[in-house]
Length: 269
View: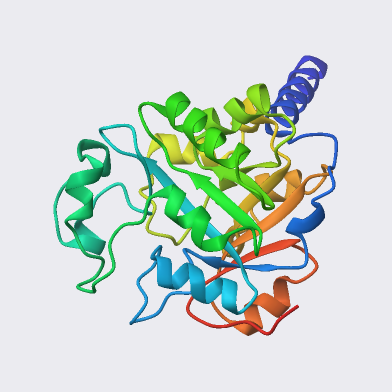
């Protein structure tokens, strides 16, 4: 019996070691005091992750969360999905297309096209803080290197986040001065994320051993699962995704320093 108790204690300690974020709670500085428009302030006329959506967020004083992919010819573009089908009606992967090919496509049957990361940064111009999500890619190191290269030259507040723990680890190793976040969700999630072995492992939070993130970017509707509760024991910051009503935002205020919203325009904090 004593052996079993010791074994369980060792396993519990090992699990806490694996899920622990950074033990140093860093100052978020100019990232705080803002709510973040998910893929810009988009609507039926302004597609998500389009330059008009980003400009609208800036005009209303909201921070911006956006997504960065790398193309087949090593260019950085702003787009959420791995596939072009939902937003552009073309059944191809971003990673298989060149920038020139992507430029020929329109977003949701509008005149807007897929922006480059440079165009996005120019449109924001440092006016509001950014949460930059680095998308999963086979060439994750190259993607991180190129994102970092652009952001080093950018004059404005930002942090980075990713579902891919390799990207968080890259920033931990190469740019430990940059605030980094691990995107995650609960073990029981109603989201459309496929319930694969990989996503189950991510939901367990053990990937934090790689990146030791400064903040946890959690799917807010699943933040009461056991791993999430255990994470609350550590001195990390928290970001909520994706908040879809003022009532939900008000409810989460205080539990999350950063909130990523869509489909409504929040009251200014």
